[in-house]
Image (cartoon, rainbow, N blue to C red; front, side, top):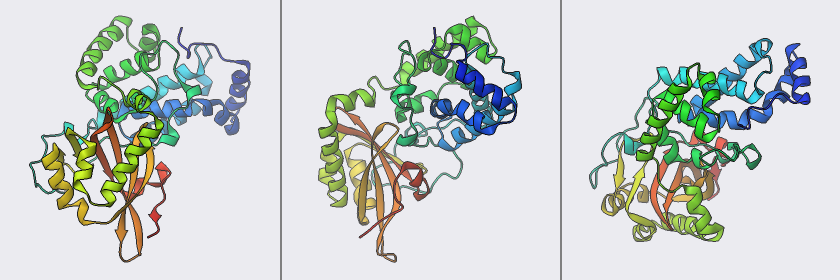
Length: 346
């Protein structure tokens, strides 16, 4: 039985009755325990922090307006997931699926300039560590995937290659551990349809998702070696030492910079990119965690201000003890959401 299939508790029932009278504080107390997991679900569905915010706002407003129709025959969590999933499906059906630059075209040739940003919203966005579900929010033991590994960049990117309803089925069944009957009821379809969609989704995900999660890699590496790797990366970038950077990378490492379309793969193209563009600037960095992965906030020297201003968040994807991919999300506007200051002193 799924962890979201229990009946309402006495405390929930009391809050529900108060919320139905228009008590918005009671409504907040009723839904607050579900906010993190619901928001993470919306992000997995949409690959966008902004879209997840929109879907979450829509879902909570719909739930508030629909309290009178909630009879408590399922858990509150199941009811909220029904509303949130359908909010996500409405967004997904009218917008292009999000991708990472490596899924949008071939890598740039050695020495090719990064190019202009893509104006339309096509890229997967990073997810703040502070907003990820905590251990107490974890799905039941029957879930196929860990909560945190399903928020890693590569996993979220793989999900976006699924049609929206297949994506919803896979997340409900294998991340949230809904039964086939529960998922069918939630999506307004049949159990055979759910099982068929799940089989197709598994095939696609098996082809695109990494075989080993970053969570497993980080556990094996350990905290001390992880910190040492980030320190070595920061020292090499701040020292503009391309050889030291390359020594930290796998031979086939990829480097991308959303919202720029261009990306690079392999030592020679990455080396030419670094020496030709980023290493012409002065940088400072702060360690961070993003999407459950190692990351650094990157700050660019501002001669007018006399300090370093927020510029890029580098998310590091590891393979063993080396960096297989750097996804450098450009944009100072996202730093506050990720708990990073806007500026660093000289």
